[in-house]
Image 1: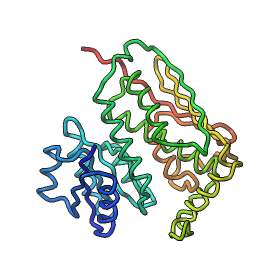
Image 2 (image 1 turned 45 degrees about the vertical axis):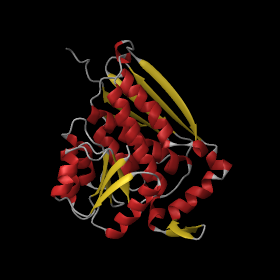
Image 3 (image 1 turned 180 degrees about the vertical axis):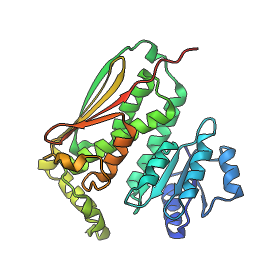
Image 4 (image 1 turned 90 degrees about the vertical axis):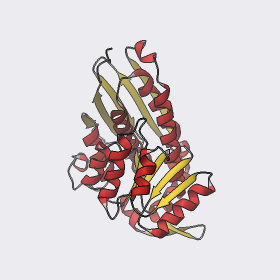
Length: 302
């Protein structure tokens, strides 16, 4: 996944992201608008991945999503949105968005997202016959907070889903997005006890201005009291359901804060996505374990 098409109206952000990607060996075509040349590049598979903003003009992102979804093979799309998600993000997910980045762009998150997109789409093209042999499965993972790497967890989860289920591409992407949001919540809000409000406050790390959220995150990852906590992830299937459970060692949260309403503050973005992507969602009494279920598709017939 070396060729990336980058579309963003903000020239400063466009230049910043382009510099980051080119520094890491990617071939980048950067544009500030969707013109005839951009449409032609998408249709001709001139890019392996598209990064597009939906900050100022939602139609741009949706136009790209629809175009890339119709390609064969499809081209993954990563969107750049504002910090506060709204209904448009749920619509983007329904159109096959791979993932969404929020401003300010974090370099590590950007590069990890690209690598995860590459792994998913390459792995999907390989195909598998293992699902013919496995009728049900149960996998359990234990991840220490200090060692948490989303990319590594994704590889395990997506290998399982690609090999042992019959989910279509869009469904696989949706399931992973739900799992990703739940894992991030368990990691950051659960085990590290970070507050979302800190993202709107500033701090400094090594002389650079970053969010207070990032400052506290780095501090707590160095503190054994937080870093040695674990996240438990289990994936299981029977004849009807995929069952996903994620539990952390944090203090939990009150049930009224996870009701699925628009007014959710602590876990708002993640839970709105999860409730919309999974068929059934529930929590334990303490609020540190989430259970997500998705009905399994039937085996394809010739």
